[in-house]
Image (cartoon, rainbow, N blue to C red):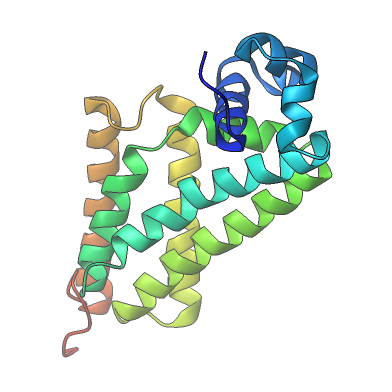
Length: 194
């Protein structure tokens, strides 16, 4: 069997967390799943705390930083939101759910989750401000969009399923209609108000 690196341990931890829940994040369970000894684990990590820290950093980067960077390849705020939605629909939402559950009992998970929630909301708000919304409205729209995502994570097994994509499209259409009718805003950015 090939020699494992630290990332292999983290990937297995993410898989176990997603499939079996928080109770699977035990050293014995990780070693059993990878057919390795505790010594192999300690070759890469000082202790379980350091492992958990790397796992949480990996989750935050993969589920938040990468989608934002993907969206930022676009110039218009409307296209940024569209690209963000495309990438977010492909994420492992079961993992997000498990991190959220874990945050109720694990202070480190709670702290990282709060940072992730803040970053996600901040980015959405920034996009809505780029569309021409004032700060208060942008924050409200960001909150609504994020709550819709959290609800969709509960309702649908996969967010790239036809049903979930239809729901997301309905929500986006409602936001577009609101921006056009109430604020006279284009979905791609500020326009002259009448």
